Length: 330
Length: 207
Image 1 (tube, rainbow over the protein chains, first blue to last red):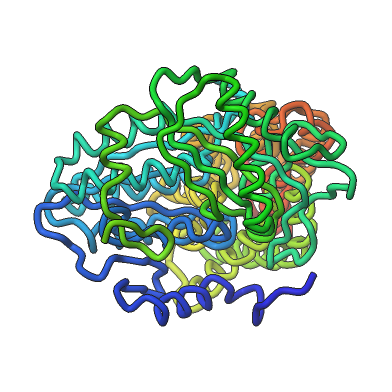
Image 2: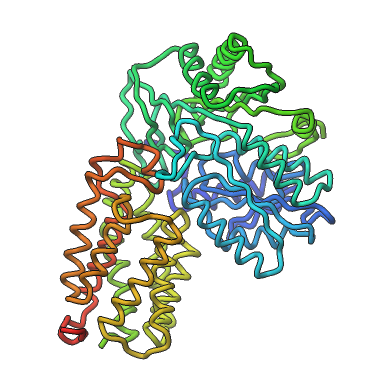
């Protein structure tokens, strides 16, 4: 598999150097792997720190800036960052108002953020944590690692980020983040497997005429394989799986998210089908976002995330944001 | 008796063995995980080997505590905190002693495995590193060779298991039929004890 890289070992550092050059408004510490908004710490403001394996860009580094994250910690490709990174990020963004860790529910991320929270608290930083676990494809039970954090991470980071920007206290920002997660559900499909730089070949074998339903964002296989379906059939399946789990009473935010290698032309076409299904099922839509936001390297496919919002959450969603990956109103 | 130099060699041999088996570990991980177990452990144990060679700690406990701390800081993923905790807790349990016998080491490693189970929430039979480590600890009192055999058998025995922890658990039934990468790397770690020498007779123990 051809890749636009030098060597696999330096892909993350190379990307961070390039990001630093493109975004002087951010402070990019390439050596220690921390991306911080340039004006941090902002007096009186709660700091928002997230992170995870690389390979999901623009998540998380591309969501650092006014109205969203204060800092992001990129790990190796598909590997959670280490506690040292989160501790450094927390120290850089804490103004004394405390720091919220936004953690996608994967065993590695949870363990490393937990260790980091203890260490940061030892250094006098008040830390709260919110876990994102929106993926309905995974059976949530005591006997599994639980649902994965996927597309809802964008909603959590945006809405909690807006609340923090307004100067809301840590307890309130954490409660809002939790509320967003509890009201969000996602479902993803893959049309092709993903190739990591370290392996250089697809991490699983997906025959040409098949698709994988319930895929994660790390090239981990999903739960079911079927012969290839049309965009409309996929929308019926994905939205159906979400609505089996969440019955929205309020309007929803809709994220139609590309996995990395699916063109916008296809994503918009898929969104038309998603909107059709939501219309048929009587789900009112408040806002729609279409694009590549929570990706999986070069995987083809898409995910749908719905987030049920009340007036407060919608107001915070609409609030100004200025980051490399998401920008409006400022 | 086992001194600091033995435990340093244990880490060096493990690093070499992880280097040798990295591709296999990554291949196993791509079946039921996310295809990075080999490269992540390689990065971690190389860092451990380099640090221990540069400034060798004076006691067995200090060697393992430092190795564990380095794994946490360099590996990432779940493996970093889990392997880091295993070695750190084992090291802390060994305390300040300049030399320990194999029984003392077995008891300390048991404390390390208990800490890993508490941190990761895994039990025997969940298709994780625990399935190689628990039988190894049980056999360690007998000999390093027995521990190696037990760890290897434990790793192979994960193949028919249904994964209940970690990324493989997302697959449900489809995790069955694949050997667990974490149990496989744990078997490498335990096997390295034998190659780190001294022989079992010199290491002492209860028999």
